[in-house]
Length: 270
Image (cartoon, rainbow, N blue to C red; front, top):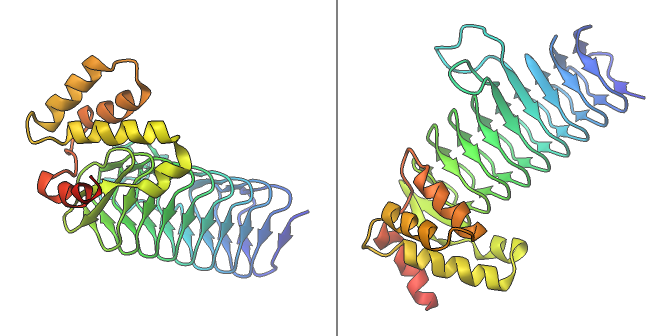
């Protein structure tokens, strides 16, 4: 049975599943759908065509599904789809998609979005991610699974961050980040590999292979793209080579790599 505060304002067109809790002074618009076990604390606003998955908890003054902050948006149909078991903390803002993108913003499962996180239109966030306080995502950003982004970080539109990456706090990121990399700075560049996440997700032999692969990729000569092409030719059947090198070759913004920035930490390990 759902538990709904008397002061909540809920459209009769909204779909509220069983076991949902809606706190005082929440506002729920026409196209909103709340799956089982969703919990809204007080003063949450949900608008537009917004779906919230099972057992997701949203804290006070979060605003989800309102009109995208894009001057090209003219009221066309778009969606915000949020998966299961997410924690969305105070004052978060998440916008739906636009006609100029994929027409939806997607958030996976088991993510933590801390206070004051902003997720703009057409972003795609995987699962098991942590976005710390004040992280700002511009439009069309793609974030893979198991990514951590430190507080007060700003990320340029269309940037892609692959699986298992760590973005240090107060970074300004304008280029793509390949799998399992750590980046830091303004502008942010790759500083090394995310050992902590790799140890959680991978076997030791796979970690060793990925370290060796990145050492080959990040040699000054040939270029990063040429190195990625060579690796794909020589190791076409290796899943890690496919994942990492394909990501590099598909990058439209370029990779956040500068040899002088990457090498200092890694050389100390050798």
